[in-house]
Image 1 (tube, one colour):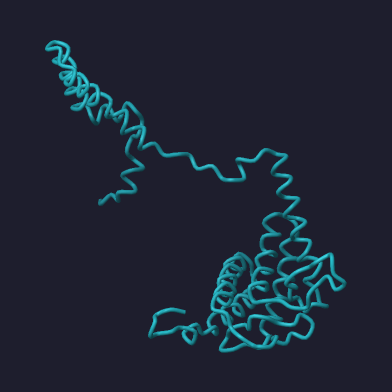
Image 2 (cartoon, rainbow, N blue to C red):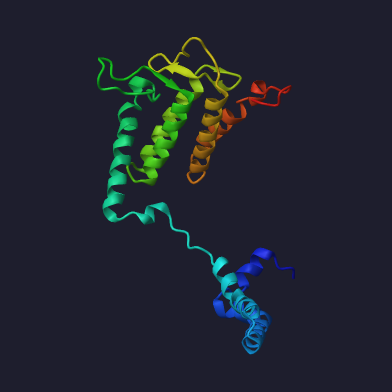
Length: 237
């Protein structure tokens, strides 16, 4: 029979009249104080009475729940269309270069003013970001769910084949050869980013029947040993 405070708040009336009903004593004291103040010509009693009378109004005002408005709802149709077009152009980069030629490893950057426009390297953060770009493209209806699953399968397959250190991806790889770039090193930040992305992908796939892919991602997460990157003396990664 116990009622949680959260449930009690939901059941409680929060309109202005309810506040005045609940704080009727305050209102009564306020009226008496104002009356005495007028009778005795005491300005302090009048001010105090006004304060007591309007206390329920103040409590109601500061307790009002602001209606949460999503950021997208603040945009007009033209602005929404603009944002979606920018998103589409951004995903076109991933769509163009997440291919067999690059081993489904998204290149780190593209520069128009140089001869070789695409660099042949990628990082663990980039790889994780490409996974999220595919998921986002489904949400924004740039690609179908089936297309996304094909992308994810290919990227995860490549990730499994990459050289690792205690489950960690190296910070940089050659997109053509899949070899780690020298000097080989691990970044706690980038590796943390990547594993965080894997959790998001896993959550996304739980809405599908791709149990084999979920198992692969789970293994990638569990095999990434962060304890080796932890400095126990200084208690810091």
